[in-house]
Image 1 (cartoon, rainbow, N blue to C red):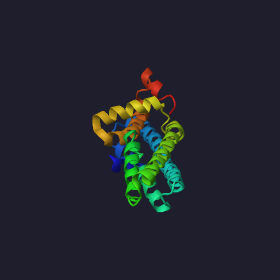
Image 2 (cartoon, helix red, strand yellow):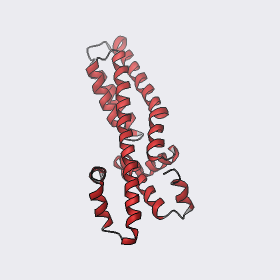
Image 3 (cartoon, rainbow, N blue to C red):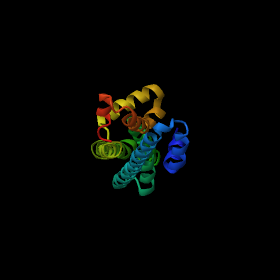
Image 4 (spheres, rainbow, N blue to C red):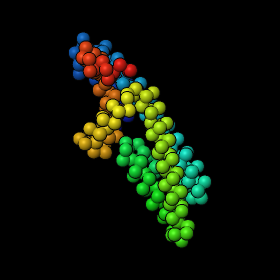
Length: 201
């Protein structure tokens, strides 16, 4: 699925022509419009995700450097946390745990109670601050400006996808839901529920 998404975003015309061959001629224009809209929304979404990862990495790196981890160690921890943050809801927890383990591993020479324990506390504080920033600032900006869906709507979609397909489902939930919304608007716009969930796209 990830390969198909990459192929779709990279070469829209070839992908669109391939899809159009599978549908009746009377639906060709509608399908092309839907594919074009989907590509634009997904491009904006993935650009937003890259921006989110970058912002998280920058803030984590600065924070970890300030508390004394050293730039290289801070950058590695920031990279891990930033990339794992792509996994909705579970990612920040996994990233935080792995980040703290990496921080501890680079300071094993410290006395646990007088030196290492305060460092762990500062790391937790930095990660917590970044997650608050992500939840309040980064994520709402991405969802509202890219896929144009309500945060509660996104939450429910991700939870359902996670229940059905685990972590891969959670990662692909938003791109898949965005695609479904666009095609529903193009072909099922007479239904009130479709009008409601697609009114912003």
